[in-house]
Image 1 (cartoon, rainbow, N blue to C red):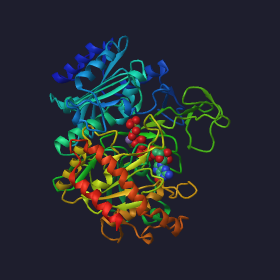
Image 2 (cartoon, protein in one colour):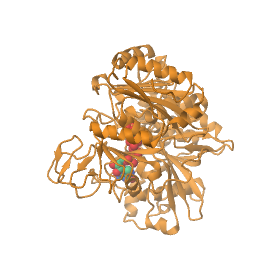
Image 3 (cartoon, protein in one colour):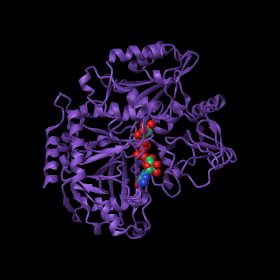
Image 4 (cartoon, rainbow, N blue to C red):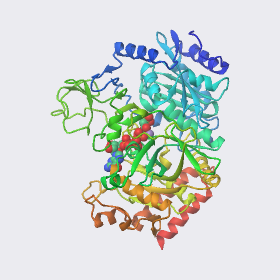
Length: 594
Ligand code: GTP
Ligand code: SPV
Ligand code: MN
C-alpha cells in the first residue's frame, strides 16, 4: 500500500476493508497537488477516456463520453438503506443494510483487479467552516478524481482537518462493467456510508454531490439541527450597495444554474443592480447566533446542464466553461477541436462527432449532437459573477426562500406564502414536469416537495416536520415564495421570457421582504399587483402578465385532490405527515370554496 496521508485508524480501516473487497492492484492517495492531477490527466488521455480540446480556445478543457446506457441519475436504482424500512419512508427505495451490503459486496468483489484504487479525501464546504464536512471517496475512475477535484475541495488538507475523528462519509465507487442491471446507488445513513457501482455518470458517482451533500447530509441535518437542500444561493446587490441573499429550490434541469448566474435586464443594470452567485445546486443552511438563517454552498464547482446554455441565456455559465472544464456527452467539432451542444448557437458543426462517438453533421443529421443531460464541470472561480462571499465560512444571511417547478398551467408566475408553516406547505406541494436529468420519462408532472423528492435521505414526513421545526428556531424567518418560469400561453409557447428577466420577479420578492410593496390576497397566497412587476424594456402586455398571474380556483381545487393523494402516501400508516400541513391543506380547500 502507498504511503498513508493520515494516521486516522477509521480512515485506514475503511480503505483496508474496501481493498480486501475490490482487490485493486494498487492504491493511490490523491493529495491535491497539481503534478499528480496532471499525471492522471495524461494517463486518462492515453486511455482515450478524455479528449484534449483546443488549447487556445479552451485551455485545460477536456471532453469525456460515458457509455450510452449511463447518462443520468438512476432513481429506480437508488436506495436508502436505513436499518428500519419505515425510516426510509414511502418515497424512497429501500433495502436492508444487510441485504444491500451482501448484494453489492458480490458485485464489488474483485472488481478493481488490474486497476488502481484512488483515495480522494474531500471537504464539502470551505475548510475550517463549521458548516463543512469531510468525505473519503474510493474510486477506480480517474474521471471521477478529476471531476471531484473541480466539484469539491480535495487533498491532504481535508485529512488534516479531519484529524482522528470518525465524522467522515465513507464513499465506495467501482465502475465495474457499467451494467445497468447491476447498477446500485446505496446510502447507509446510519453508517455514514455510500456504495455506488456500475455507473460512471455524474450524480451517481461524484459521491460528494447528491449522495453526500443531499441524501446523507439531509439525514445528518435532521439529527444535528440544520438543513441540506437542492437550492441555488444568489446575492442581489441593489443600487445602494446593499446585497440581499436568497435561495431557490427547483427540480433538476429547471433553472437553478441559470437563475444563480443571471444577468439583470438593462433597466436594472443602468440603475446599478448586480447579481452574485454563491451556489447553483446545493445549499447547507444553519441558524446563526443572531437567529438568522445562513447558507453555504458546499460545492466548489458547477456540474451544469450544457444544452440551452449560450451567450444570451447564460453568458456567465458559458464563460465559466472556457478553461479547466470537463465536458461530458457533448458534441465534438472536428474542425477546431471545440465542443457544441443544442442551443449553443445556430451554427452546428457539420464535421463533428456526436455524444455517442459517431460521425455527425449538425446541418443534416436528425440525431442530437449532445445528450439532453450533457454537462460541464467547471470551477466556480471561473464564474465572472462568483460572489465575494463564496468562501465565507459563516455563509450568507438568507432573506427569501423560493420554490419553483416546471408547470405548463396551474402555478402562477409568482406567489408568496402567508407564513413559515404555509411556506413549508407551498414547498411540500411542489410539482414539476420530469426532465432528462434522471433516467425515465420526460415531461410527466410529479410531486417533488422542495425539489428534494429524489434526495431526501430519510422519511419524507420527518423531513417536512424538520422544516417546521427549523422555522421555530429562526428568529428572523425568511419569507417563502413560489415561482413558475415555465407557464405556457395558448399557443404552447413559454408565456414568460425567463432568464435575465426573472430578476423582475426577484425584485418584487425583495420588496415583499422589505415590506415596501402591497400584494393581492388569493386562496393560495399573496400575488403581485400587475403594476408592481417592472416590465420596462420588455414586450410583455398587461394582458399577458395578468394571464401569468391568474389563479383559477377550479383548477386549484383539482390540484388539491392530487395533493391529498400525495399527502395520504406520505402519511403512510405511520402518521408521519405533520398536522400543521394537513391543516394548511384544509385551509386551502376552504378558501378555494369561498
Ligand atoms: P440541475 O443541475 O439538474 O439541478 O439543474 P438546474 O436547476 O441548475 O437547471 P438549469 O439552470 O441548468 O436549467 C435547465 C434548463 O432549463 C435549460 O434547458 C435552460 O435553458 C432552461 N431554463 C432555465 N431557466 C429558464 C427560464 O427562466 N425560462 C425557460 N423557459 N427556461 C429556462
Ligand atoms: C441533478 O440531476 O439535479 C444534477 C445533476 O444536479 S447530478 O449531479 O447528476 O445529480
Ligand atoms: Mn441538481
